Image (cartoon, rainbow, N blue to C red; front, side, top):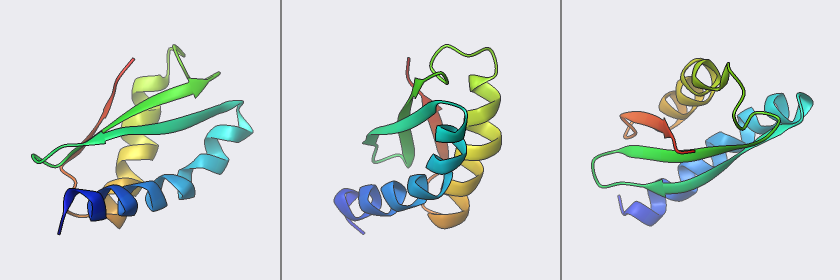
Length: 79
């Protein structure tokens, strides 16, 4: 699978978590999918800089992305 294919699959997975983030005035942007299987994202809106952003990325974003795209090893929040 190419990195572009992975990026498309990760983007689709992010669409599933986006409504939950938007409900709290936030959003998520996919920055990069690395060859090592990392998905780098940036939280936006009210989620950016929130004290719970680390938990949001691990407990929501990473969980859904890894469930939908098993090739992804981890999701990293880039500020």
